[in-house]
Length: 217
Ligand code: 5RP
Image (cartoon, rainbow, N blue to C red; front, side, top):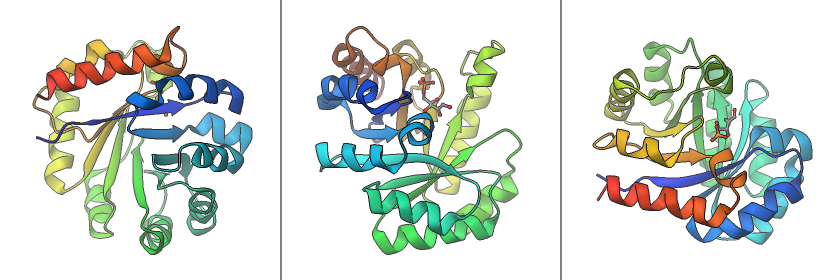
């Protein structure tokens, strides 16, 4: 099984607050996420500046497209993103429009699985050639105390992988969670607060990478 990548989610309210921890953690990071919060706060300028500082890193613009797929994905790709996110509630027309932009630019599309998505939709995303999905424990679920990753999540990841998707795991992930995923085909682990809000972001990112290497050796 391929070793999962580590993605830092930058969900800060301004760019300087994102750049400081990013500069420290970057050597241990595979994918940089310009988080939804940062994109809303700073716009595509955040993606543009992070691209200029990290010309060779994979960048996700977590713009969570729900509509106007062509226009929004174009903005993100023009700013330097490699990947863009689309919410699972978007229509297939929107997904198709984003896929068209992505294909023309060598980018990739991730569907963010929000409560209520169906396997019928998953098959349609597959048919449209969407390569990635994100299984997401939302902040709202976390606030309600739904904290543990369990068998239901692992089975769902395996089934999505069997359909052909690369599967990303996110939502309050801490290094102690990683061993729970042993043998589960995870493409990317995302950590936001666990890295950018840590006292030592470089050490935090390295701790994640060490846990990933040990679990998926
Ligand atoms: C917020 C998100 C975050 O980017 C994602 O959940 C990772 O952040 P954290 O590790 O801080 O939960 O999608 O809705």
